[in-house]
Length: 245
Image (cartoon, rainbow, N blue to C red; front, side, top):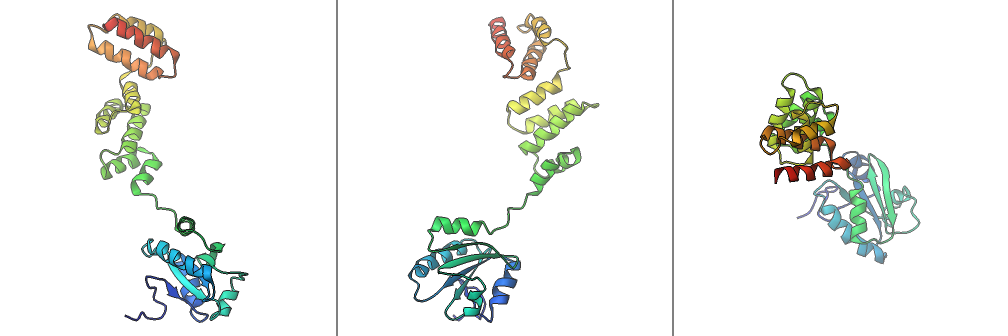
């Protein structure tokens, strides 16, 4: 099969002085174009060419390869003002975004090509979670009912706000996701009213934990709120173990 002039093939497209503006400059405004400056007499060009073709083919059309024979197309080659070849230029939005001279290995070429690609778009889920307000987080959970980040953020928001029914709503949300240190802490916040003297409260509850499940849960919630960094937490955990067993 014979490809129409200017249409990319699996090995890239050959560009000329006549087609350079359209096939490189203008095309790069829609998709990154890698320009490979080469010549028949250039040995390193022949080793680099297949690597460029392989790496760019793997982008599935997100990057285009344009091959420019400098001997046959001196005007286009002169635009890059190269002193030696192989020389490779990455064109984005009509301008040179990156370049290298000399033969390179596949890993280096892949890194070069990937650097021309636009950053991955933020997903709608990530965007909604990043907004972080109640309406956005509810919308995120409509997309994915058990998204860990959205559930955690919304439950924390509700607990912090502590309006009528907010704490119960937070506790209803948490079972959607696996238990973690974050979920345990948020649940503890939802179940526990602030206390002025944590040690006094723990001392009182310690005498009740063996017989009263609610007291035992409140004791554990207070330890969650203290957190593992507080030196008292490990002390009170040992006392709880002694009281239970």
